[in-house]
Length: 447
Ligand SMILES: NC(=O)c1ccc[n+]([C@@H]2O[C@H](COP(=O)([O-])OP(=O)(O)OC[C@H]3O[C@@H](n4cnc5c(N)ncnc54)[C@H](O)[C@@H]3O)[C@@H](O)[C@H]2O)c1
Image 1 (cartoon, rainbow, N blue to C red):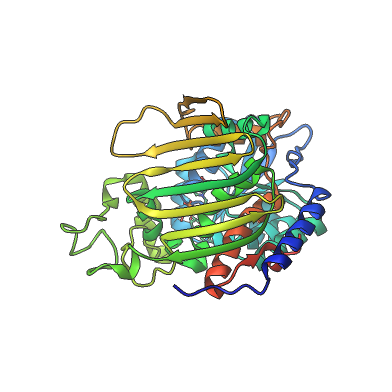
Image 2 (cartoon, rainbow, N blue to C red):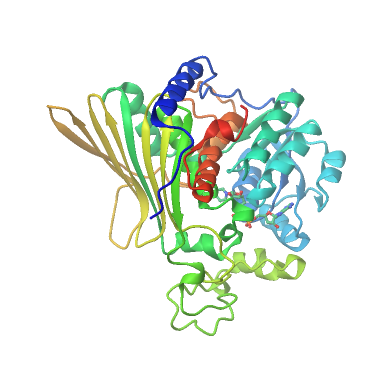
């Protein structure tokens, strides 16, 4: 293994971290954002860009079903008109559709734009919408590189418009429980964290079948997927990242296999491939993607072994926070089960949490917890799922956004700063791997 070189020696690093720590005290540190500006006397006018699975489901069908008393869907936009037409019917929307975003905004005058496109286009639409006078709700990741992140922060500042980043994981029952335990200081001050995330051979593989497998679209899983995990950690710790040092490898998918094809649907290796996935058995996905291929050529069931794949499936990162907490993170995308383990080391004890998302054995809990007090006892307890999209999290988050938000004692609402800090850990990790050195967050963006 090659030794990575840092331009900073240890003493410089500690002194610059200490300065950051002091500086950060006066920053609006992970402060919660206010709610969307709601128009008086009429419904909120919402337009949506990106009518794929997430857009048409969570931000389309579900919004129209659950919030039609407070909002009105006024326009839909996508580069694929065939998918958009099907999605419109699926959602039960009655608004016009557009392939031209600016035209949609001019003709429908939305108050708020929801952005659910492929990741690399989020920044373009966020900025365009704010410049045209709209607030924005964007899916994660807020952007895929540092230039886009800077442009969003600058545009928000200049236009005075508001950006909400939809970190639904902050509303899942187990992440809330972790936040409450840490805020109670039951295990004292946190000094370091072990955080290991496992994606399985089904869900993990799905990233390699889609546009996510190309860095230029997703920013890699360090950005696309880990933005959730890094946001959780920033929020759990109420801390801001200072430096990242990472490794990444592609060990299972992409070029690694002895055989490959273009896609599963017509694959000559169907019988022998463990990753064969039959999209033809799912009518919704056939309508949304396969029948829309004529418009943009996008293949939803691409071969997980295609040589073009340029993201990693095996990743580790060391993250240093402004308050001297050290986090050791890993993400693996071909595991036999899915979920995560997180352990917080505190000055008075340790919190262990094991979260089960899917596994080939029977599990009735969503999460098992153990809190161990130093020199004292250890106690365990568990949690069950809240039910619904992402263990109940999607609905709770949308209620907070579209209905009266009420108090936010855990600081769950996320804005552009939170969106930026989470992706910047992943972007710094990417740069760290490319340049074989630790990478500072302040090298990327001026906040
Ligand atoms: N928070 C969560 O739990 C969660 C879950 C799933 C997806 N997501 C996010 O939602 C977004 C969409 O993901 P998806 O799974 O629905 O993907 P998808 O491929 O199903 O949909 C993306 C849509 O964007 C459209 N699109 C692509 N480029 C465009 C452009 N330049 N202009 C307009 N439209 C464009 C595509 O035609 C497609 O309809 C992603 O950013 C993803 O990270 C979040």
